[in-house]
Length: 205
Ligand SMILES: [Fe+2]
Ligand SMILES: [Fe+2]
Image (cartoon, rainbow, N blue to C red; front, side, top):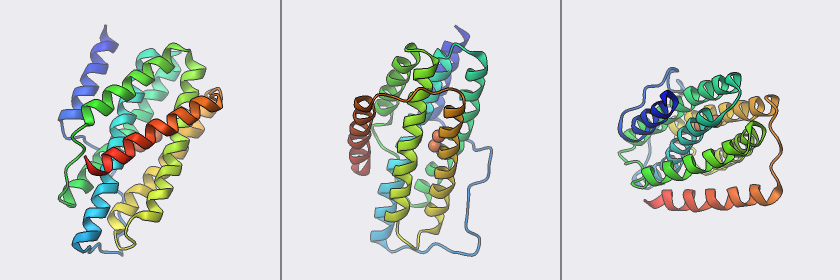
């Protein structure tokens, strides 16, 4: 019951309150960011997509913490969730700076990711970890894509995305060390397809 309330609390905080990061937002001190109107719109669309990704990460880790059978694993999920909260706070702060709003569909993304996390969790800790591993790998590749697409002059967004990419790689490694099963290829492809729908939609809405 306690854990259920914890999951509900984390959903409400993710969707309706301003997240607080435990680490300072990454910056490139030597480089000032000055963007034209079009660059700013482009960067905002990409950072909105990344913010949605972090909303989903909150949902995913919350579902994992709820379903994990091993208490040590639950601890590990909770620690990863705290780092994901930094990502959520940084992307939200950057959206604010760019004068853009987060996705209007965030409650929907959260519910979807939470449901998927619960399904994976029900299949046992190793499958659940396999789901985390594959998610983090796909997110890492996606963030690399954004480093290629973000305006070269947007040092502020790039510093955030680069740090997130490093953290996601660490989360993937941790899941692997904790005994993640490799997911079957069709499951990976399905996850890619779902992520594509999400990122394409969040670009605009
Ligand atoms: Fe993240
Ligand atoms: Fe992560």
